[in-house]
Image 1 (cartoon, helix red, strand yellow):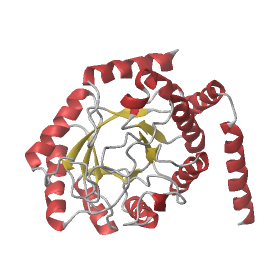
Image 2 (image 1 turned 90 degrees about the horizontal axis):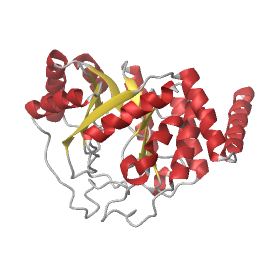
Image 3 (image 1 turned 120 degrees about the vertical axis):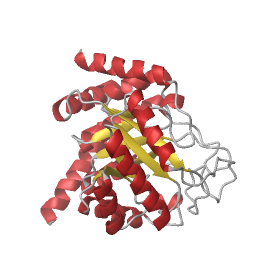
Image 4 (image 1 turned 135 degrees about the horizontal axis):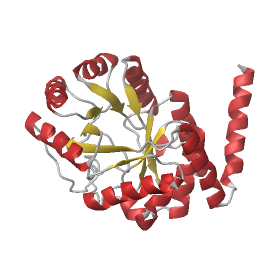
Amino acid sequence: MKRAKKEIKTSRKGIGRLLKLPLMQLVARANKTRKEKIGPRLEICGIINAKSGLCPEDCAFCAQSVHHATHAQTYPLKDKKEIVAAAARALDMGAERFGIVISGRGTNQEEMDKIVEAVKEIKKKIPIKICASLGILNEEQLRRLKEAGVSRYHHNIETSPGFFPKICTTHDLTDKIKTIRAAKKAGLKVCSGGIIGLGESWQDRIAMAMLLKELNVDSVPINILVAHKGTPLFGKALLSCNDIIRTIALFRIILKDKEIKLAAGREYVLKDFQGLAFLAGANSLIIGGYLTIKGRDVVDDQNLIQEIRNLWRE
């Protein structure tokens, strides 16, 4: 036990030293890790906001919370036909994964029944891998999703254990960790990451990456805060491009062979520097839009994907 603690401490100390490196030296190290552990694999994902708004949780960054006056669109769970059509569109855009996402703490029996039917229909008709993001679930619910055809469950930890209470008070990080462990026990792969730019420190970002490593998640989405008007975080300054690239590089070095997905906020903050994020260790992106933030033109993203592949061949 003492030896394990020493290794973790040494690892954290080493990451602290990496923080002091000039940016392009850090990027080079991260790119080397990506080449050795991942290679040229680039995964493209599409999602559907299948149920929007009226979430009872008070996450400070979320436009869908009933606690914040954001005027975000609200609607109940979309029907099977709409969800299946969205999966077909995702495939047409070049996605190999399709995520069904709903707002709320979890899902009720009626919603679960409808989602399971939609998943089964997609499996029959569309050659795409299916993910689900339905909040806090138990192992029985997660096994049902697995049996229907879901291969990966998405459930973000959002930030570090120390910073989490500053952004959410209606549930605890342990609730999220239980769901992640239950998903893995049910035989699902797990997609879990969070948001940077909430006001967290560098040590919080490192602690977040270390927890994801401990949980042995398979895919790590990194969202960049673009705060909605009406949320408590509205008006917070955007992260600099340098800080975003440095964060991605650190996550790659810490998480080694895990998928690192560039998600919401990339277009607004990184803009023309998105390609650099993929030299810094990212190897996945979401195409076609997000939940309450519109994505950029699909053709532009398809061109970016080709540029990334060209970069990786050099």
